[in-house]
Amino acid sequence: MQTVETLNEGLKRAYTLTIPASAIEARVDAEIKRVAPQMRMPGFRPGKVPANLVRKMHGDAMLQEALNTSIQDGIQSLIADKQLRPAVQPSVELVEGYAPGKDAELKVELEVLPQVPAPAIDNLKLERLTVPVDDAAVDAQLQKFADQQKRWDDAGDKAAETGDLVTVDFVGKTMDGVAFDGGTGTDMAVEIGAGRLIPGFEDQVVGAKAGEERQIKVTFPADYGAKELAGKDATFDLTIKSVKTAGESVIDEELATSLGLESLDQLKGLLKGQIEQEHNGLTRTYMKRKLLDQLAEGHDFDVPPSMVEAEFSQIWQQLQHEATHEPDPEAALKEMEAEREDYRKIAERRVRLGLLLSEIGQANGVEVSQQEMQRLLMQAAQQYGPEDRQRFIQYVQQDPMAAAQLRAPLYEDKVVDFLFDKAEVTDRETTREELEAAIESEDGFATGTHHHDHDNHKPKQTKAKKAAASDKADAAEGDAPAKPAKKAAAKKPAAKGEDAAVEPTEADAAPAKKPRAKKAAAPAEGEAAPAAEAAPAKKPRAKKAAGGDAE
Image (cartoon, rainbow, N blue to C red; front, side, top):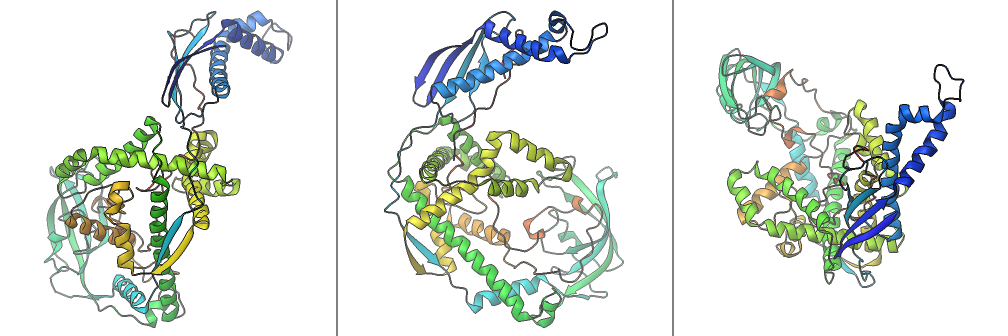
């Protein structure tokens, strides 16, 4: 195989590889010799089928496979001989296709990982802000939890008001009077003012009385899950089954025992443990951001543009999604465009941090064990149904790039824990409000460490926006605690077709405040991009042996 370097500029490399026709033909001959003794054909004794007949029958397929294998081996040899560390999947192209009996000429383009300077980790200094859990915090959580376990009293002939619980049967129809799929249900509980249904639905139930029938008109959101309904007007024929008013929230032993607990004290203990877990998460977030700031300072080496572009694309897609939920999506998109370069700098910083953490981890023997990787794989597979779960597992096991993406967040956390152990750490007590303010600090804008749980990656915000973002984060994280043990009073199963009327919100989820699992391919802003290892060279395949281009 002949190799000619055609580009060596920064982190970009390009080569022309020529694979001799004789090498490809030798693979075909070897394959014919291998399979001929196993061939069965009428008129020939087992194992006695002539090689030329085998070639005539299966030669095209064998040539295709021989070409693909030659390309794969050629790329692997190039990477090994030139000691390359691909940053992303190499681009491979067959020049002018391929004709049997001729040499195969390949054009290979790739970006390589930079030589990362070994970061100094001996003089790291970090402050650990801790928040003690006092009785007031536990009582506040307990009250919110009790408020969620509302006790409903029959309202009789009283007209429904905001805050009441109305049970309805419903039939959803398009504006031409045709009932749509999933739009019919019975005994659906509607808490007026909770904001769980599509806009306008709950407001039009105000004033209803038990036994009444009424028709309401709504407009489905533009981003509604059922595309055939998204942005469309519709009507719902309602039959009001009952109206109930909320009883007073009571914090007593009955509240705990209804959850399968022994006592109110046990419930308080569980809530305290949950709050401590939340505080520990905030403490770690703050320490990690400060650690990454120290690592980023003084390191300004080039990073592969393709990795930056991939990271930027993830940030941009998330921002575009979030913009659709803003009061004025068009204005939000316009603001994003004005700050595009700020986001690109954040992406570049995150890629650089990923490479720094990778260098530290490899230099200090940080590894993700097979057992840990297996647990990650099993956890990730749970998001799929039984039929797709095994396919996902096989995909990750067979695709090194997918495995690297799955492994990267855990690897990053293990490197961060290693650095925490190495750092000189001082402790200081603070309040939750001060800790959250430190995490939200404007200082993070310059470095890309600023972070919102919902408004991720936004380097600039007005005070009003920040307040709104903070409110959304509180709501999304679930101020009410998890329901320990079994659930409280039985809730009626969701009415058939209820999803047609319900706009999914995080308030509908279980109220447990659980840390969100990081996505392997989309780390939170301020965290390092998952660049823990060089991109494995995925073996390209030629489309056609004659005249085709490689994929």
